[in-house]
Image (tube, rainbow, N blue to C red; front, side, top):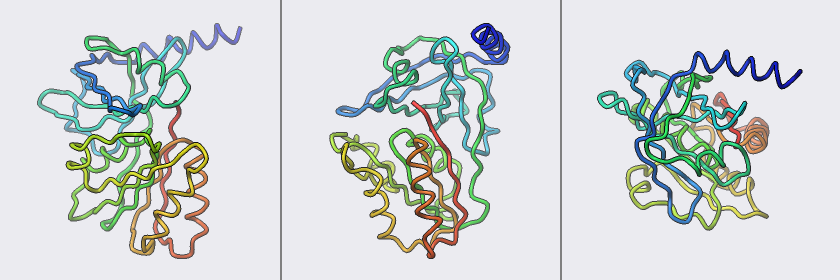
Length: 231
């Protein structure tokens, strides 16, 4: 009975979905990051004024939210950065994608932009790279200078072109034994009172852990916004 209800709900949801075509796929050497270029023919990209998420069908009765970034309103093509370094339906799905594939997607919860001008501190794991690339595209550096720290496995190779084009992004290496404390060490080296906004995005455990540490820090005066991702 539960499966019948879930399938019925899924069918109703998918009737409201749009179709996108995979234009190109790139993978990061030595890492589990995929860049997926999607053609969204029926979406007005010029109207985007918040950090969007696309709810993509990744398997039967399975959906995952991904953040479109680097969009071009003339071609209606955007890019999704997807971390496949975890077990889960989304990770399995992205490894099988190829150019020309059609995917089903719908609108998911969007993240708001900073409400006031000033420096923005961004803390993430690899699953949230796209989240902060979208934030960068939607804001002006003169009004919202970004400091982005991304926790990645020590064996990841970050493409040089990415580092050159995104100097705001700092990659903090971790291992199976050492993780969240590396991000904490990184942001404790900053003057936290300088930031007007703080964003945390990534897996739910990281998000909750870092939020608790920042809330307990007396130097933090900024509003903290958190966004969780799943594999």
